[in-house]
Image 1 (cartoon, rainbow, N blue to C red):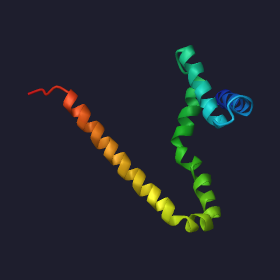
Image 2: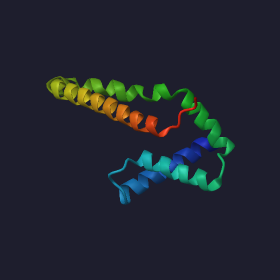
Image 3: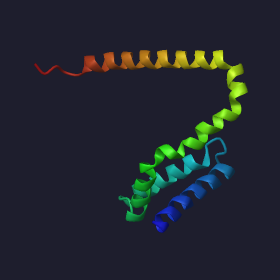
Image 4: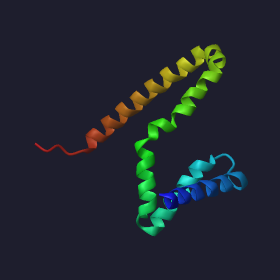
Length: 116
């Protein structure tokens, strides 16, 4: 388990380095995941140590979002001041998503042959 954690932290650190020196507009952990994906793709399989740690982390993924959601409380005055703009953006994005999904479904449904 320790070996898998060390490997994951190495990829996160590599991602941070790439982010700091080459691609500052992409978060380091995201680059670390991309590097890990590239490594695993080249390797052809997931090592047992990374598989064990990955499974353990995924089981408790919900807990990893708690600090981010609790941190929102610090910005309540900002959120309240911009409540209408945030609400409008949410409504417009939901409507746009539903419209695009419906349009895509309509196009893809026409392409699929019927099996009668």
